[in-house]
Picture 1 (cartoon, rainbow, N blue to C red):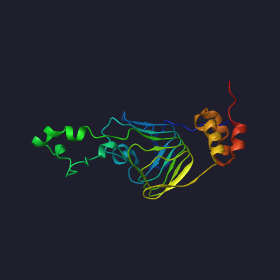
Picture 2: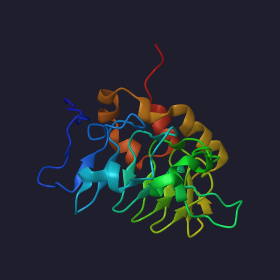
Picture 3: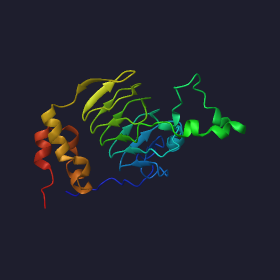
Picture 4: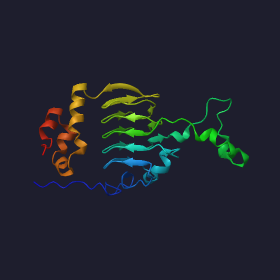
Amino acid sequence: MSFVPADPTVLHPMPGQSRVVLLKPLVTSPLIEVGEFSYYDDPDDPTAFETRNVLYHYGPEKLVIGKFCALGEGVRFIMNGANHRMDGPSTFPFPIMGGSWTDHFDLISGLPGRGDTVVGNDVWFGYRTTVMPGVRIGHGAIIASGSVVVDDVPDYGIVGGNPAKLIRRRYSDEDAERLLALAWWDWPTEHLTEHVRTVMSGSVDALEAVAPKPR
């Protein structure tokens, strides 16, 4: 039997479904990195992801999204550019309004940030979730619809709520370590294609049994 891998370079992977886009061939910003096959689903305009879903992204912090992530409609990443001063009487960003107020741009340009926002591989984001600046989301995590993620999410954790809290882990610590060691998202595409049923519905033991042999 021959196995034909999917194409990670096409913009719309589902024929007749313009609402689904692969993000890697879409993004152009040097501040956004996306792995192969991660997709965004939106019935309005998924191709506007960089401007509508990654907000206040003035740099230098990056948004890094791994491979095989599923982003539901309305998922938004709030970046460090959204920060305002909170140590004085007013939080209003006067310098961005122009005029002589721009002479005081140092009051907002040096605000502390939380660093890059980093999403692991195989992360599922539910409808209209929000990720705050500098959050790190582990491999295999699930973010429930409507969640506001303000803290890091562990590998294979399921979180939900505002602010999002850990509901449970998908696997025991031992099995999670085994899955991380297998790192199926890094398998050669041809091998992954041959064993996609095991990746989607098999046990950890079954996945180990079909893992590529070291050369």
